[in-house]
Length: 549
Image (cartoon, rainbow, N blue to C red; front, top):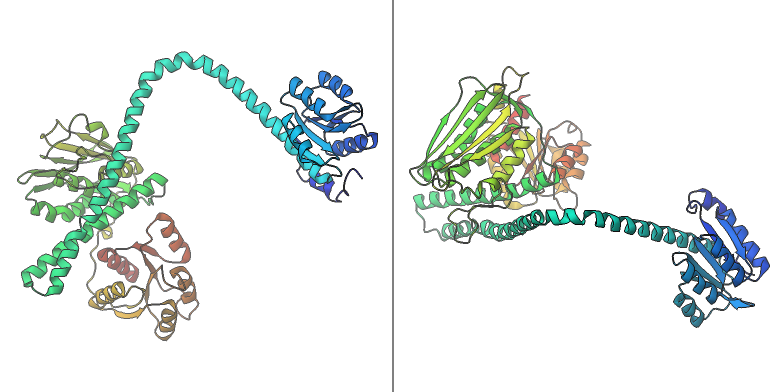
């Protein structure tokens, strides 16, 4: 038999979408009439246009007349062989696909056919589905070659048309290449700086910890040690936050929930945050705010981050005895924040790049000022997010600088909710279930809540949490996410099934701080997601808000 049994679902597969490319034309060459007719009938059922030839001479005549997508030819025929057909196809129509069908299964025959340009090789009796698949694949391959040929011809024509334009743009491309090299160099410097900046805070932290353990410090030394540890821990936390913010900005995953807020209140909060830093560096810090509120639509935390970055940058680059001034003003339908310093200034050639990521005016190993070169890039991105604009001005090195941040005023809001800037109460008086597998973190959280007057129920595992929650109903749940055996999301679902815990507020605390982690926590039922290291004031402000409503 020339073919193996046809599967019953063969036509069904064709109807379901395995159709050949449209207008595909095939040529079947075989000296066995029954096989030639059967093969043609099978292929016509697949939707192909099929011509047949009983010999090589008939095939040559048809090749002169028609442009075939594929030729299926027997390799051994009376009065000639398939190799001559393959050679003629290769000469006349090099893009036509040839498939050899023969009853002589030998390596030599296959090699000879492939050397003459055959696309594939089928041995009689062949499986019908295999033949259909081979032919379909061959036709698709030809269509790809034709498309490639057409694209190449179009490309050659386009290339010919564009040659004179390429010459005109050579200088511009050269300039862009230099900028790319500079950006790549800046990134390499950034990576080296990142390693340095992340390691630097660890030295005083570990050093002071060793001194504390030795017990040779007096009360002033202990206070100095604790201040140094806290300062450097916060510095490293800020570096990590900057890296995460840049990642969120680059991927478009930065969370943004605008609401009416007063820019004056934002500036006041940022000024208080950096006041101690300015005092330590002996830099005069002055703030002048408008009498009336400047109400804009924005996210208070992000707005404060913008002002904090601008003030921190100004203080860092201002020598002792210098001055940093921040003031607000209304300009028509816009609100402005200006931060001006008497510091080292910005070189004219660097001013256009001052908001670029990974760029610093002094990127050498001997530079005097640390940092990752991300602060102003984050500022620029956050300003754009608020539909605002920011400009940097400087008369040059040693002449100070000024940054002007402009936002549209909110035309709808008449006043700002004064409760937005609230203080944390000293007494919370709640029963708090805390789930944390890190003993140090759990001990810290327990101490903090106990100092606020809370009754604390600590748990180091999901199993303990479920048992303790069933014995004593908490009014607040604080849970880590990365808990062994059962993560925080699954644990919260199990806690919700316990009597009386369906509506108890739950706060996620985790080292996973990407935007998708916040979204997953929200979907799981947590009302908030706080990233480690925990901002204690933010945590208790959130709890106060929950318990006061």
